[in-house]
Length: 526
Image 1 (cartoon, one colour):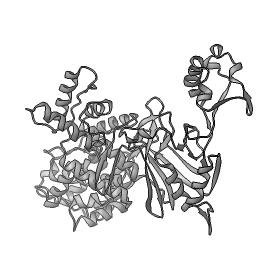
Image 2 (cartoon, rainbow, N blue to C red):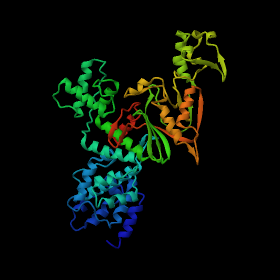
Image 3 (cartoon, rainbow, N blue to C red):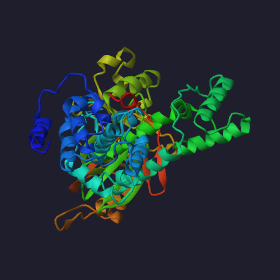
Image 4 (cartoon, helix red, strand yellow):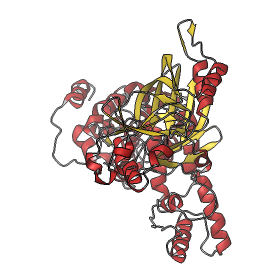
C-alpha cells in the first residue's frame, strides 16, 4: 500500500472526472483494513460526492487528511471520539455562529463514524471560512459557492486542540468591536431563545379587536412569551415585553409595527441576525472618520479616531418613499438652506394644495421658477388648468426656521437627491418608529452634529477656522451660508435590522421588507 500511496493521492487531488459508479461500503466493516486505509477510500471524488460534499471542497479536505497521513481526527472505527462529539454538538446549532443549518450538510445517524467524521470536518471547514469571509452575495441576492480557506482551517483546527469548538468558532470573524458585540449577543440569543417556525398573521388592533388579540396571543404562545392558559393582563404585559425586545414602543397596543413583528417567526427573525453578521463580516472600511446611518434602527453615528463622537436619532423615508442605501462623502454643511422641492412632491402635493389654496406658496415661504432663475408670479397662473404630469415649474422654499430642511443640511453627491437635514417637526423624534419622510434623513439636533464634524475637519495641519461659537453666530444671522469641509466625511447609509452594543442585542423591524428574499434563501439553503 505504501508504494502506491503517492500515486493514489495524486489521483485523488487532481482527478477531473469523478467516478460516477455506485460506491461500495463493505470496506468499512473489513477488519483487515486499518482506519487510514478506510479513510483513503472515503476520500475519493465519487465517495465525497456520495456524501453530498461539494466538489469545490474536495481538494482542501483531501489535503487536510493527507497532511495527517489519512488518519481520522474525530472518530475511530466504532464511534466518534469526545472531540468529534464536541464538534457535532457545536454544529447542531450552527445558527448561533451566524451560519444557518441549511448551509451545512446534514449527517444521518446511520452513517459509519468515519463517514460522519469527514462530514463534520467538511462542515467545520465551511463554517470557519464562512465566518471569516462571509457567504452571502448581497449584490446578486444569493449564496456564494462553498469554499475552504486552508490557512483559516489550519488555524481554527490548531486552536480547537486547546479550546472548545464553540469558543473556536465564535472567535472567528472580524475583530471589529461592533461585530464582536453582535456575535457574542447573537450566540447567547440563539442558545437560549425558542426558535419557532410558526407564522401567525396578526392584524392591527384597529381592525376587529378580538381577532387581533386572539392572533397576538397565539403568536406570543408560539414564541414562548406566554403559557397556554393566560388572562388579558398577562397578554398585554407579554406584548409590552415583546415590543421592548424588538425595539418598538412598549405600549402594549397592537399597532402596525407590532402586528408585523408578531407575524414573523422567531427563526426568520434570527436569520435576519445571520444577515446582519454577514454584512459586518464583509465590511472593509477602516477610516479615520465617517458617518454611519442605519435605516431600520433610525440612528446616525459619527465616528472619529476609532470612537463614537456623536449619536443622533433620525427620521427616514416612508415605505412609499424609501430611504436608499448608499455610500458617498459629505462635502459641505449648509446653514439655512434653500429647499428645491423634488418634482414628484411638487406634482403630488404642492400643485393640489395650490388648486385649493392660492395663498399656499406665501404661507410656506415658497417661490416658483421657470428655468434656472426666472421667478413666476403665482397669482398670474391659472393653477386649475395645470396638470401634474406636465407641471412646468420649479418650486423653491426660502431659508427660514419653517423651511422643511430646518436650519442646517449636510450635502453629499448621490443619484437619489437625498441628504441629512434638520426639521421643524421635532415631536416626531419622540416616536420609536420614525418612518415619515420622503426619503431624506431628518436628524435630531443636527447643529450638535455639525459642530463635532467641524471640530474634526482638517487638511494636513490646517484646521477648519469655523468653531462651535462661530457656527452659532452664523445661525443667528438666519442667512443661507454654505460651509465647505476641508476634508470630506465618508457617509454610509445602511440597512441592518439586527444590531448590538455592549449591553445587548436589538432586533429592529424589516421596515422596507428588504431582507424577506434573503431570509427565504437562508431557510431553503439556495
